[in-house]
Image: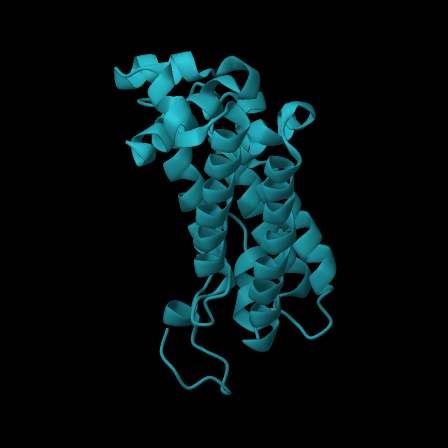
Length: 230
């Protein structure tokens, strides 16, 4: 029951925000009583704190798996980020693009004035730890020879973390997922066009390239210093 409460609470918080969710709504959705919700969590802040903390942790785990993987290209990492966002977007925008809220982190950030200090700390933790994971990914692209040694790693990280942090509002403003995907791919093309090496830069600047077909270790080969296959 405790897990069912948290799962439904997360869905309702994403849809309606902190102020739009009550123990009554959760109890009704689970066909139980408000007293039962109070038994498990005591009060609304305690529930929201636990839900937010677990959501942030799971989201960070997902992005770390993408961005700290030493065996995937920068293009693979961007593709993984798009796919990760798309899966969550599709949970709340079923059978089409409606621009509905789909990110608990974005929703809680918008409701920060109503949240407890612990819940706000969880939201801030996401941005800080995401920055570390993306830094590893960009630095790895430099080490692999995809990006030049002169690449301003911190500048690229700042841009990309900004896009990931704003993913929810971007899709809501556009009422579609497509604009977010175009932003990610534009970042990839720009980074490779400016700082890419060899085939990576050539692919980014070739006419008609969309960003979907950037070379990867499987198609372009690895730097000579690398020994493991992609």
